[in-house]
Image (cartoon, rainbow, N blue to C red; front, side, top):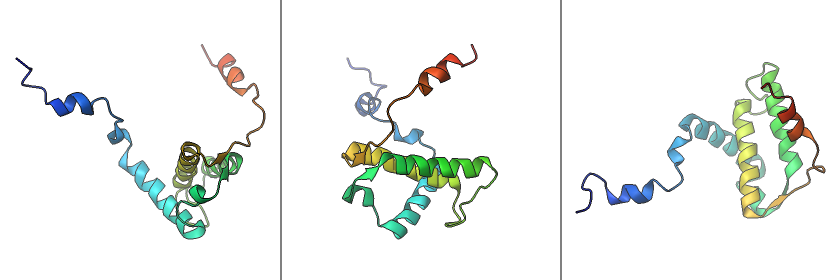
Length: 121
């Protein structure tokens, strides 16, 4: 006799990607920055033409550095720097998975090993 307390859909659904774990506030921030980018550059422009990895890494770092130095909102859009950083990372992921990412990162260096070596034990 099958377990009547378990819905069969649950057995399948539990194995799928848990999209509900992404905080809605994060989705909203990213969507606002994506809309700003769509107005400036066209929606999904990174799927029409390949994009360079380092262009987006630099953009993420600029937004995070401005945030770190006390500026919450980007002066050009009025949106949170966090929103723009999320959008840049989202584009990198989508471009990578779509085959539209030009990997122009420098030759691999020692940073991962250094971070591990100097991590407090």
